Length: 78
Image (cartoon, rainbow, N blue to C red):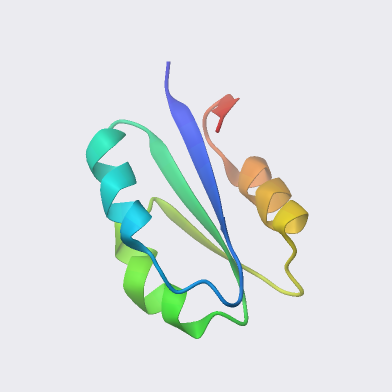
């Protein structure tokens, strides 16, 4: 079974090393970054490391996770 891994990114988040590790460990699974539109660094640094990069206006953790779940292609979410 394949997973869709949804990672919420807040407007102040700066450390994106997690995405390199996720891509290495979960090669056959979908990785979705759900990012606050106020985080300008995230798009530049991680867009190429994920399967989907979502930008969310007025983002909260719940909105980011819900948007990621809605766009996920697999039935199992993490």
